[in-house]
Length: 313
Image 1 (spheres, rainbow, N blue to C red):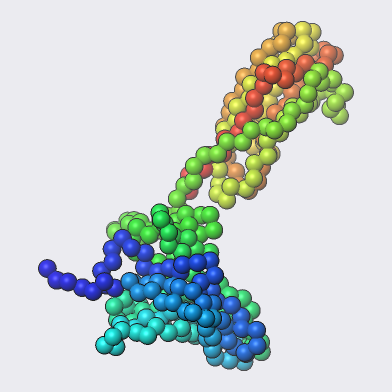
Image 2: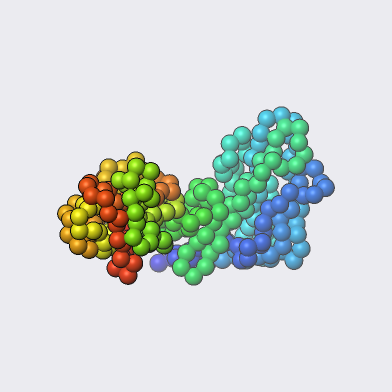
């Protein structure tokens, strides 16, 4: 058995984080060329919390041409006898937005906590953009704003919410670490408005097709299937109305054919054949096969629902 200091042996504790929404945020400096501001606040990493009582200035190198991304870090140094002090450092990178190889990784010795990547373009003394690489650690997980944080969060079991998408770092084939996107749960949407009362055949352009209700599905941010269910009462004795549920780009989700009975029940359910991406809408439709009577929709006996289910990722 051997003992190591707290910085080198912190299993189950987040490696890095900042405390508040504005803590250690990197911003353009309003007047100093090739400089950025790191706002006051607190940041923590490997058992050490750094606190800045005022905004700090970090100077970057000038660039005459091309593009360069500098990594702004909170550098912690355990090597002096009393440890520290921590410093804010700009690490020059390359022309692509990535963590430079020169970043120090050495908890308990010398270690860099990434805060932001700053893009500089030749001939301009102000940053073109700043990529926020901070992480917030709270009860139950981590939150970040940019996917690049996954390139420096390397602990197996790490789970981070990046702008609404949850990623988990797991052991894959041959025990190699792999990031896996966590599948969200299903969500149900309900038709908020219907055609009302006795619906005459003249309400549709051709007199044969009527849209009873529509469900709008916002983009959930992942490929999905849609399971639909509709149940309603209506009809006329001498006119046959069939019903279907349709969705753009999909085969008929569900079809119900009913004969000329008085006030029949329509009970329809179905599932998409192909995965859907982006926003979509589902329509509940009537088709008149024969007869001339209007469709008498019963307002108090009707339901139309669509459940969004994540497709296999």
